[in-house]
Length: 194
Ligand code: B4P
Image (cartoon, rainbow, N blue to C red; front, side):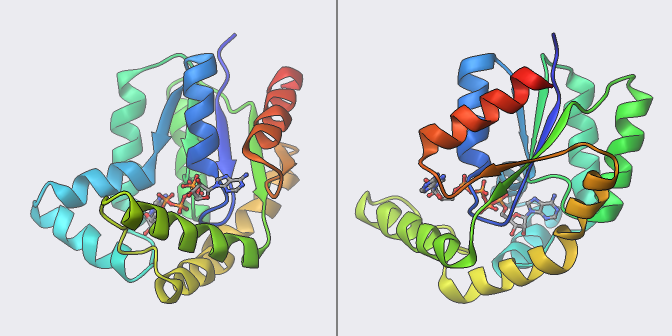
């Protein structure tokens, strides 16, 4: 059975981490708008440069660019999609609904990873330290200052999606404060019930 899900939650909640598990264990296709935008910024195109400026301020990239990227990926097809970090605004949520209807697909669950703000900041600081220690590049938006702006954007523009999907009866919550394996087990249970 093909399953399509959204992973929703604040920056650093573990959406990318859990999406990685689902790709490995279930062969689903991960559509991470964060990864797509990071690829766009490295491309050096005019659009990529505009995207880089917005991301480095901790703000959200325009709905038009992000929806265009998602449409391209959906048209490539796949065995169940994980929307990781998308939608992030009500306009993106409406656009996703339209895209899925157009492609005769449906959403099986919207999974919220619940993590408190202090833990989020600690994770981002740790990610930056780990990258530095491994000699890898540190994400420019992984500083405590930019992270505070990312969190503000989340509460202003993305958190309203929780009510949006709750009203549709599609929202499922998992405890994102638990260990990575425990979070994965909770998500597995949601998918078995979907
Ligand atoms: P994203 O790439 O989506 O970044 P994120 O929110 O930080 O990631 P995520 O929740 O996936 O956390 P992760 O698993 O890595 O977005 C970056 C930027 O792109 C945005 O600010 C915005 O500018 C732009 N953007 C993206 N999508 C957009 C859209 N739709 N519209 C407009 N703009 C958009 O986990 C974080 C850390 O925690 C990792 O180090 C991980 O190892 C650790 N961790 C994970 N689970 C853990 C656990 N259970 N316990 C302890 N640590 C854990």
